[in-house]
Image (cartoon, rainbow, N blue to C red; front, side, top):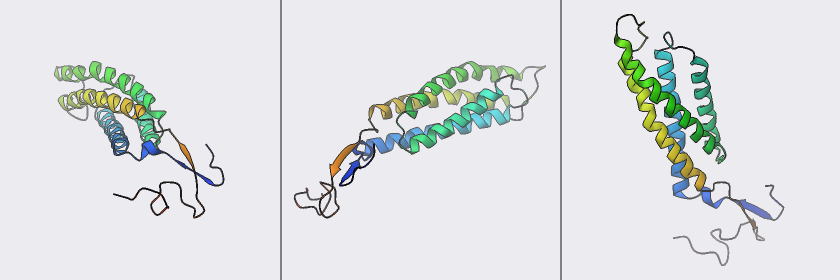
Length: 169
């Protein structure tokens, strides 16, 4: 939406404390997920089979989505939730497999098998939280814009110091 002369655009839902907190939590969960995937990927790189490119893609997409959410992109939230569902499924399948690698005949990864299994299983609750908070953020309607006329002094309505505006508390 373009600003017209004599009008200003406000986004009231972005000013709410709940929206700011949800945005911060979603960004934090995306970054923590990306770091965990990088640690598991780096720690088990020599023994990973086939899904190396998928893991790199998850990390890059999570970082991109975190950047978009930082810029208040509401449309990135359902994409992040969908990717979190996929990563949750992958982690639920792959987590127990790391614990099974302590038998004879398996190549040892750079990090301990049990640590990689724990980190992989830790992704499951983080992805569940990411899904919940991303959908909460989507329902907060960050995209709502309101257009207000600017008075003769260059202030939008309801701004402090404007005649007739409510006094700040």
